[in-house]
Length: 430
Image (cartoon, rainbow, N blue to C red):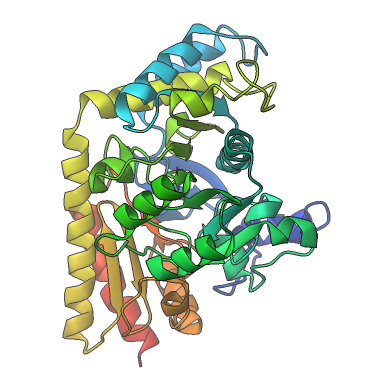
């Protein structure tokens, strides 16, 4: 039997790359088997090195709202490349996209471009500390804000998948300034605030977390956090790296009507290119160098190729709000279809959905925080992942990741996804 190109590449890669991959969740350890190496992406499909075609529901972990290789974004990138790939100096498109972000995101009055979501969250915490003169901050269990030292405490996503939420290499000094509360529990936050009165600079959270699977905020929860932060002089930071421009033009904060002091962004604002950003109130952002004393810099920040791609993406979404209705419709068709099939088969698994983000948990418990997410049968999810992959549907290779849907999913493709789901569920429940 001939060995696949993906298998050969994975074996070879392990000689030069830790674990053979450049991001842990890609290694497929949580679902069994070995990763596919992707050669091409187009619309709703991925194509691996062996020429196999897969309907995919990750969309590069969120940014491909319009599907892969969208003509408008591709044209913008090719045009930008004609004038150079990196300047290390200001360009007009940086101003254009900053102005557009400010007009679309309710909390953002000024914005600073960086190169990733991790860089955005690290910078936002530093600015919040500099602005308040306080050292500690609160994060929530299972919320993932990138791999910065301060955040790798009760983290979600890849850290959770790998079974090691608290990474070696994070010092005790760093950890002591990170206070952790369960999600959807206002009382726990109040207790942390009372025990650390006047010492907490900020509270950061994913308003709609997707890194322990999709979990929705309980009614009044986000508003309650806003009230606590206002009362205590703490900076409320919404990490909208996943939800920004996906759930609505103005992200989760627009959808829920709760305005943070700062917002971190990523993925979508690059249209698939490496980019991130953090922004917020003028008085906070004016603490950032060179306007203020808090230092943050980056040679590739505002890279002209990334700015061109992001500007094309955001301009399209801003001018075509009907895309959000389409995304919601797609999300509803898939989630309702999954629930109906599960019911037909006598299965009772939890499905959480908001707009074009969706997760099925292999548990009959309601899933609303880190602990309830962990009741899911991860072994069964691994079997389901492989069964779907065999039928040409590529899911996130972790129970603890949201699916991210795109407008490239036609009704015909959705039917194929649901057919694959039905047959996969039958197979794993024999």
